[in-house]
Image (cartoon, rainbow, N blue to C red; front, top):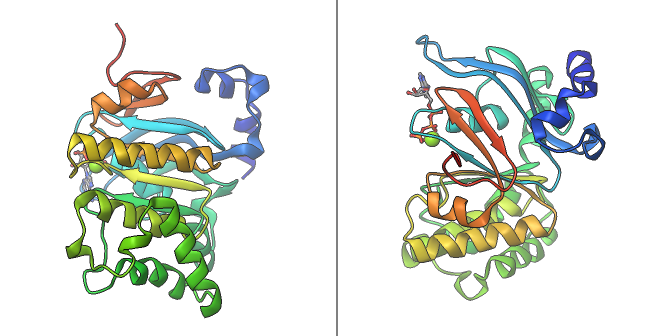
Length: 257
Ligand SMILES: Nc1ncnc2c1ncn2[C@@H]1O[C@H](COP(=O)(O)OP(=O)(O)OP(=O)(O)O)[C@@H](O)[C@H]1O
Ligand SMILES: [Mg+2]
């Protein structure tokens, strides 16, 4: 951890974030990637010397062409993969040094949302969300109220007893977001969450993610949705061939020049 700690103390942090050094405090960084390179076993280098700091409460769009490394970066954050070199730090913990038994607890601090929703087809919306708590041994009496709370937040109370096949794509994604939220995560990571949705429904999902961000949850969203990124003017981190080529507050999907 000392390498990361000393790097965090370095003045380059403010520059990386594009904001004054004084505003950046290390204990409020939810995500830190320091000099991360990821080479897959077949030799493909998917990330090269990536530096990224995401402070608590940020809303970050991760953009870049297909194959740029967006999903790889997300896989490192959920510890599906380990970096070949460099450090991936979540909530102050270097994921490569995390004892195996602590991995599930760390994963619960992150809610993950995918393009294809990944709902269990034989379970209702309520059961899908409840299942996330059951597998982590949450006491039964806490599960019902927690599920109802997140279903209300995403506007699916009326559809709680529906199966995924009885829902629209937007509703299925909202159910997946409810499931991602039910552990009260510090960070929501969404990999192309609007990739299967039409423009209007994509906006609904974005509004929901923005509301969740307003509630204090940090959001990292990988997307090809140029319209949404450019309209919202949030922080944009752009990858190309595994490198961060732009990290801009209030950015558009495409580089300004
Ligand atoms: N398991 C793997 N083994 C080998 N190479 C991989 C593996 N996963 C991804 N890659 C390669 O790494 C590079 C980055 O892939 P990644 O999935 O991170 O890109 P992406 O930015 O998410 O692309 P997309 O926008 O298409 O989802 C690509 O060249 C891809 O082929
Ligand atoms: Mg991807």
